Length: 159
Image (cartoon, rainbow, N blue to C red):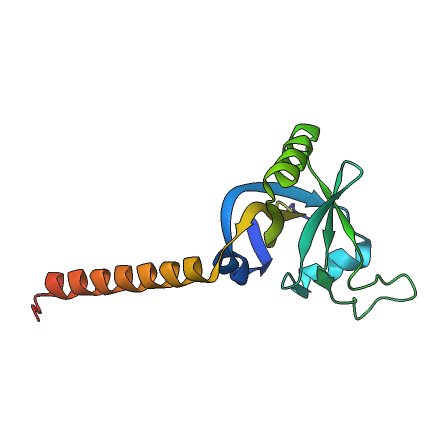
């Protein structure tokens, strides 16, 4: 069987980019059971309530829902169990320092297959206030209007 190449997105947390200001991102491996990987290949995962914590010098992903594998037997996994994330020691130490001192959160942005292995894009993020969210929406709307006006101008319709 040939090796898989490229990236295939399994699940993404679109709301995280709305609720958090992303400071930095990291690519992490995940410790999984066999039935979890089979369920992920079917695209049955949700990052909606997921977050990461630091416990005893290790990073753990909590709240991630991977549906039970339909063809699994008694060896099937629990859908919301805690899963260990795999990072280099230096990255873990940096994340520990940043989360302790400045009150930043660890939020998973997406989960994907990279060359056949499951990876999680973990973000070091700071929560946005309500007025920050409104400012971002207003800025995005203004940018959309500008691009529409430029498009109309380029097409020759000068309204």
